[in-house]
Image (cartoon, rainbow, N blue to C red; front, top):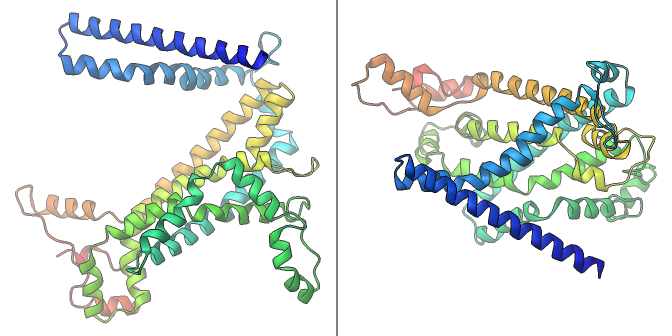
Length: 369
């Protein structure tokens, strides 16, 4: 009975919210029309209003509130008490915070490159014209639609002491004279366990994104490379990688941010309390377990600055390894004048074979014809 009462109350709250939003949308539409705005403009602002209200209430307000709470001592049950920079100074002497930050950084350091390499390998396989490739593409994308909680439960069973992985590898352990790893129970194997679990994400969105990038590479570049005698490795290194570098850059940035924000799987996989955990989990434990909202907010803001610094570092490195064909065309057109016709990027002019064999970059100013 209590459950039904809660359900009816929730439905009533939802209905009241919808009615209030509908009235607000009508008022906004009428107000914009009264101010002389066109019908299309008024409808545009009206229909974007629910999203704007949700953004202000559930994203911008908590974001600003957490910044204020980072300078306070707040336990939810009593009003916040201003403590200045005390929470940030406490971070410097908190060994668990520094250990969690190091653990999270090591996880990102290993999982992101391995994940990108695996995704690229899968995308290259799925880019081949083989029978039933549509089925394989669908099958490889299935892990992306499985909830993160289900993934955590699955891998908790797979990597348990008597799980499927240890059972299958038991002959190998016996051959090497090893005991079965206690993946999520031994402090020495927790990080490798989570890195192995992260490879599950190889068969997901990143593979599809890289596959789309491979499809956008002009076929004539490979044909010209074959005419010049470039081997398969040379074509991959000097054609595929440069042309795919913008997509790799996107996957790297999103993968890095996602790895640093690891939470759901780590939260639902039990590890010994004495071992270090991910920083997101530590922030949650401080905020909702110990009700140290101010201290948790300070940790969250410091972590945000760390992620921002690493992301900016990746962006600053992009001119060294990310190739944009449109920029080359734009610079070339600007050098020859705005009225000059665009020139096609030709990676395979005479002499490229020598450059490929010498290991020189395939894309530079000499190859813009």
